[in-house]
Amino acid sequence: MTAIVFDLDGTILTTDREYRDILANAIADVRGDVPAEWLATYDEAFSEHFSDFDSAPVRRAFGRIDGCCDPESYANALHEAEIASLSPPRNAHTDLERVADEFELGVLTNGVREWQLAKLRAYDLEGYFDAIVASYEVGAHKPDAAPYRVLEERLPADRYGMIGDSESDVDGAKHVGWSADRYEGGGFGALPEGLFRD
Image 1 (cartoon, rainbow, N blue to C red):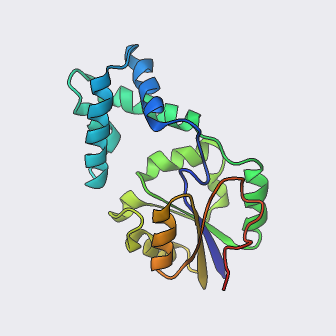
Image 2 (tube, helix red, strand yellow):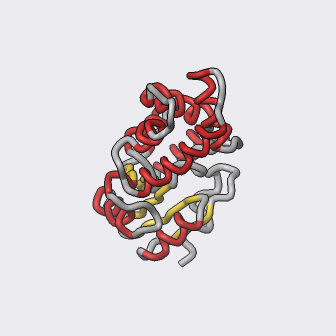
């Protein structure tokens, strides 16, 4: 049995918007304006909480902003704005259905599980995948080996191939003995061509 594992952000779902613009729009949706200090404080606080695997890193990051009295509202607005900014590649459903007929499919993503699952569900993509692992469940982000090993436990296979848009996706996969290919856009119509070169 062979498994193909996809990164989520930048691979299964992509955006052409800068994340800071998405953040700014979410803040503006709640309070009407976007103080520059809110953006800077959020970026720094989120990075810290995310790296430390703190619970609810988005809400906690907003909670670090002076004058933010309702972090939950801002966190919800950001989640909605992030999902709305995303889109799957053209023909993603057709291509994933075709690939799923021959391979087991998985998702390996850095992030909070429920936050990430909501993205897949918003575009009716969750059902194509036999296993989904988010780094927060494991306590380690890609390219650490731990998320890859948990994916292997949940989706046993003889060999694995990783499709991701970042070096951390590819390098982490190769480090644990998987095949890997850098996703450059254009959809999944050619899969698995080039993924398993051995």
